[in-house]
Length: 266
Image (cartoon, rainbow, N blue to C red; front, side, top):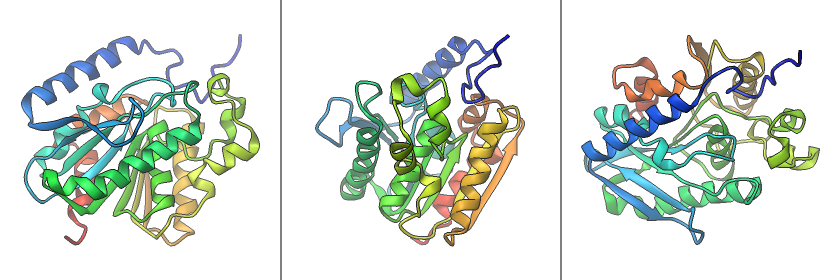
C-alpha cells in the first residue's frame, strides 16, 4: 500500500461536503453583511476582491484562500469575514489566478498587488488602512507571508500555512507547480526576512500531518529569529475544520486574529 502524501490534506477525506458548506456559508454572509463586491485590483480577470466593512474606521484583515494555488475562489471563503465583522474588523477576500495556467511567481505578485491596491483605495470604503493584517489558509498562508516580505504590515496570521515550498517538489502538487530548488526557495517566506519585524501568529490543526505542523512551527521560529513577536499553536482540528472556526465570532481563533488588528495603534 502506498502511504498518503503528508502534504495532501484531502487524503482520506470527502471534501465535497466541506466545500459545499463553505459556499453556502459564504452566500449567507454576502446576503447578511453589506459589502463591496468584485473590486478590481489588477489587470487580469482573476484579480478581484470583496471588501466587508462593518463600520467606518475598521482595521482590515486581508485574507488569501487556500486550494494549493490550483483551486477555490474568493466566493467560497467569504464566511471567514463573519466572525471578524462581529468584532468590528473589516475583511478583504482576495481572488487570484490559479496554477498551472498562472505560475506561482505571478500569483504571488497578484497577492502583493492586492495589498497595494487596498492600501491606496480601501480608505474610500471606510477602512483604516494603517491597521492591515495579512492572513491566509494553506497556500494562502504562503501568499500572506510573502506580502509581508515585500512591505511592512501590521501583523501576519497563517492557518495551516505552507511556508517552505521545497518539500512540495516531491509532493502531489508538483505536476501543477513545477517547482525546482531555486524557485521553491525564492517563493518560501520561511527562508526570507520580513520587510519589518511584526507580530506573527501561526496555527495548525493537531489532526494534520507532521509535515503541516512542521511548516507552522518552523515558520514561527524562522521569523522570530528576524525579530518578530511570533507564536505558534495547535488546536483539535483537521485542515478544514480549523478554517471553519472563523465563522464563529466567539471562537478563540477569531478573537486572536481580531485582536491582531484591533490592538494595533490607530
